[in-house]
Image (cartoon, rainbow, N blue to C red; front, side, top):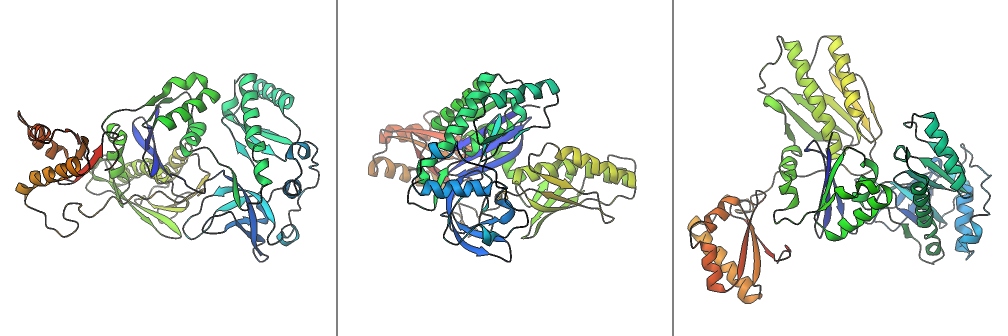
Length: 514
């Protein structure tokens, strides 16, 4: 399976599309200057203790207070809290941390009011982003993730990924880790570490420790709350978690992010450095790689499948519901039971894709087409489990009920991706009336005159529908040529299927809106 990562950087957001065999499987959007992301480390302040919930609300500087449960404080919270309070008292972290005692373990049946007080500073990490009306979910059990390992401050345990099957390799990694791991640090060795040289693992361990220790001076400051460590950008996080031998290419249209990804890959997987490519084409990157087309066909309420079958996806506050419909699909089997099984099997593939694509979490109920044969129900359940095996999010799949319903729970760490594929006509703006076509070229010319003579733009680019672009550029001399000669400017047309028939988007020579 080939994997391609397509990254579209705009002034407002970074959109990241993961393609598997050229098919869109995941879509992530990261807002520029987003203030809260999974993995970010904060020095917060306890806002309110909730004894009934055995939890507390913590101010981390967001619109909504974050939430931490007693069980999320971690067994080593006593050492974490002691370190936090001491460093706030101007003790040097470099002297304090190596001599820290980690012996005292938090009681599992304890009360949060016994360990936290209102107004107290607390070191926390985001594990779930704000969703709907809920604030972020926090933990005080700190971890800092890398490509080959996860660093665990205030811990002494070393865990190995169960996917590393070779006993000899596990022993090699264990001996290596214990030889380079400083005091009061634990580690989780990830699957990607298998076969890696000692120098690579040592360099990454040092970089993770430096990332943690660089946060200590910030903790001494009077500002509370404040963010101490920013998780990698969504792009590098996805590269970190997914990069393997099946990765074919990473295309990005921004020089700065391109350099960031190159530096990251050079550190964790130097042999993959050549797969990162800077896209410089005039056509928008998502359109060039046909991502936009797949987005339009995948995010609607109705999701079409092959030969007329389709899914209907509904979202509620409590759960997501997916209905499987055969539509006008022609029969592929000899009987109704066989046909229902074939449709359900095809629908299962699209359901798994939709879960990853929209990042749907919580409870998902899938209403498959009714089948009477128990063997087919079992086969469909096992096939769904097999398909969900590629999903990185934690999940549970239950067998079909007597009503043909399959229940799935999937880890939810950020809001589900929703893209409204229905919109008002940008030409008539919902009125149902448009100006006469004969006036259109004159309207374009008037706008060109404004940008050239009033705004002083001599090099312009115009994004418009391909049909309109063909009309303006046909013949010799074309309408565009005449305008360039008449107004002494340079005008380049950028045909785009994302633009409505009579819609225009004026850009400068750097492809920025003007």
